Amino acid sequence: MQKRGIMGIKKKIAAALGILAAVLVSGSVSSPVYAEQNRGEVTENLNGQDPVVFTYGEDGLVDGRKEFVIPAAAGENYDIEITFAGNGADSVMSFAYDRVTEDQMVPNTDSAASDRSGLLEEKVREGEQQTRTFAVAAIEGDITIQATGKGRVLSIRAVRQAAKAPNEKKCIYTVGDSLVQTYGAKYAPQTGWGQTLPLYFDENVTFVNRALGGRSTGNYLRQGRLNQVLCEIAPGDCVLIEFGHNDAGSGNKDRYVSVADYKKLLADVYIKAIRDRGATPVLVTLCNRNQYARTNSEFIVSFPEYVEAMRETAAETGTLLIDLNAITVDRFTELNQRLGPGITKDIIYNHAIAGAYEGEYAKGVRDDTHLQYYGAKLVGGYVAEELHKLELQGISEHYVPLETPKEAPGMPEGIAEKKYGNFVSRITWTPCEGADYYKVMAAELVSKDAQGEAAKDGAETAGGSAVGDGAAAQGSESDGDTASDVYELVGEFEIIGYTTVCDFANMDAEKDKHYAYKVTAINAAGESPESEIFTFGLRLASGDEPEDSGADSPAASAPQQEQKPESGRAQSSMVIAIIVLAVAAAAAVAIGVLARNKGKK
Image (cartoon, one colour):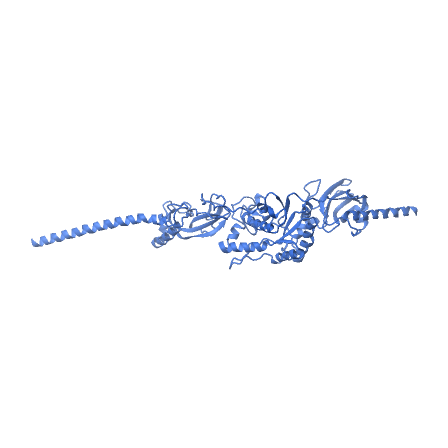
């Protein structure tokens, strides 16, 4: 009986120590008391600095799935150390925490430590003890460790990380999806706006881009990626949050998040957890896709329910908002209406022809969701400009807009044919310093012999007009052409597209036709003079060839100069005709005189 009394006292002391540990770790007496088999026994007392270690006897056995609860305070970060061993046979064990799920974890990158997502399939041998560590950001309070597999958890050690001091230089974190992500060279031209954002700030602001393709508010959290950011940020830092593209994908269970859950995750998890650590959350509505009405080129809002849900969440939680969706819809609509609906495909979104790039897109890409570099640079600039307006201390004052070039690029040169794959008509040229993108114009070329006199007259008129614009020309080759063939321009040069690289294929070119090309280079300061006309080596009729392709050549001078030889030839013909007529008249007079004299005889 006395023995039973002593054992009861020991159990009560152990329980009391467990409650005391929970109070000291969380700083509150309101933490719930868990069953002893889940909580374990506190074997090291917490005195404000020392760690709390929970040891487990038979309750540490895992055969399938088991949870272990560690007292923690919301807004604090902890270093978690798990010691485990095999139980009867070699097996594997995985450990996840809170909202991280086993199916979302990835293998460890270091045998002595975990990646951001806990521990995945750690080999456990019978009688062999192993220890692994990882950091956990407590979002809602106590931390729940989920163990799966077969083995034995011997102990869990929890150490509250020291409070972070504000960084000397404020840091901007970006979390989101593939529209924000940073890409390596092998993915060119695809670029995320989080990748270009640093272009718009001086060296007093630092950047960490934690965005990744295929992520939504749901799987970004479940994969432990938000946990990583929460363990890194310091008071005064700024966290830009952009999601929505993947949340809306109802066909993908891993990514899909309903509009209601989207708002709840943003408000109760992302915004709250970032604020709890002294950083500033900023919501960023999703960058619009290349979707516009064919009738008026006006952009159509992508996933409007999620765009509006983020706006509502910002208003309801008092969170700063950058309405990037509204900005991209307005700016890209204006661009489409001013320069033509193809412009956003050509220079903003991730489109490229086969052979223009190496790496992942060597075979070309047609992507109306993601951005190419110039588009990402524009969008990064929109975000930076809005950050400047938010007046965030330590950040906004270091905004440095890109300097507008003082002059337009020089005239494109070195235009040549590029033979690649099955492209009918394709050209390349030398890059122009300072150019953001290029405009390509084309006109059809027709053989003079094939045209006939009527077509020839029309071609001469059109050719004279094109050359009078001071441009340079190009055409294409096909089987059966000879060096003696002479070609004329048919109609005016027309814009057929834009490109951000010095490589362009005329996708509407027909195999049995010939084309001439002109190119200009464009930046924020303006447009370059037109290049010389490129014809793939085909000879142009004299009336279609510019005497001087320089930018200073007057537009009307070439036609006037070409008319002078024609005028000289006409004058010579008139003199000869007069002489012939005079001789004929003299001969007639002589013949008449002879006839009269003969009659007299």
